Length: 341
Ligand code: FES
Image (cartoon, rainbow, N blue to C red):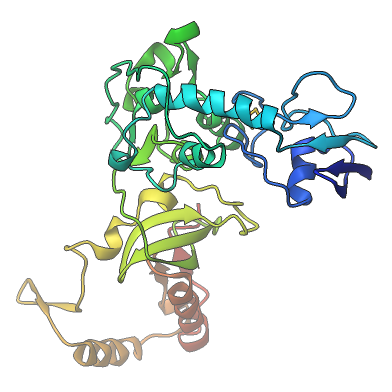
C-alpha cells in the first residue's frame, strides 16, 4: 500500500493508484470532467490539478501516480483560479443558455462552475454554428456544446469496442467526428448510448429527455446476459433506463435494446386482453374464459407432447414461472426463449 496525505488527511491506496483515487478515498472532492472510473486516465480537461509539496507546477491528479509520503493540496487559491479560467473558457464556447439545455441541473460543467465560483464570463460567447446531428433515433449530438473531454470517444473504444467516433480536425476546428465526419447513422455507431451516459455536458442528450421521479432496479430480459437495469419512472411510465453500476454482469453498461428499447412496455398496440379466434377473427375474451379454455386444452397433453417458447419482453420472474410450469406441471423439458442467443 502507498501512504500519502491529501488536504491534511492521511490515506492509504493500493500500488498503481492515482492521486485522484487517493483523494476520492480520503473523501476529498476534486473537480473532474474528462475522468470516469470506467475509462483509462486521460488528462484532457486539466480541472483535477493539484499542488504536491516539493513538485513544481500543477499536475493533473487523474494521471499522477500516488507515491509514498506525498503531501497533496487540492483546494488552494492558485488551483481554483486556474480551474475558474478553464471553466470560463469552456462556458464561453456554447454553454451560455443553461435553462434551455437538456442537461440543465445534471451538467457537470455547471456544477464545477458553481464550485469554482464562476459568476460571469469575461469573453465574448462563441458558437461555432455546427448543425445538430439528429440522425440517430435515440439521441442528439450537438457539437457546439462539446468540451472535447473525449469521454464519448473512450467509452466507444474502451467499453464498447466499437470505435465509431474519434477526434477530427486540428486546433480550433477540432471536433469529435465519425469517419468522414458523417452523421452518426452513416457510421458504425451501434446506438448503445454509452457515449450519451458519459457526456458531462449537453453535447449528447437523449431525444426522450424526461426526468424520472423514482427508480426501480430490474434485470434486462432481452438476451441471456441478464444486465442490471435501473428504470426511471414518472408515475407508472418508464421514461428512462440506465445501466446498474452495481450489477456484476454489466457494471452499468448497456446495449441499444436495454437502454432505449422500452417503448413496447406502454405501446398502444400491446395486447391488454386475451384474444380468441372465432370465425377467423380475433375477438377479446376475459381472462377467466381464456384460462378455462387453456387449462382444459392443455390437460390433454403432457411430457414430450408439450413445448413452450418464452419471451424476452416478459419479466425475468414471468419467465421463471413459465419454465416451472413447463417442467413441473406439463412434465416437459422442451422450453426455449428468444434470449438463448
Ligand atoms: Fe484530470 Fe480531466 S479529470 S485532466
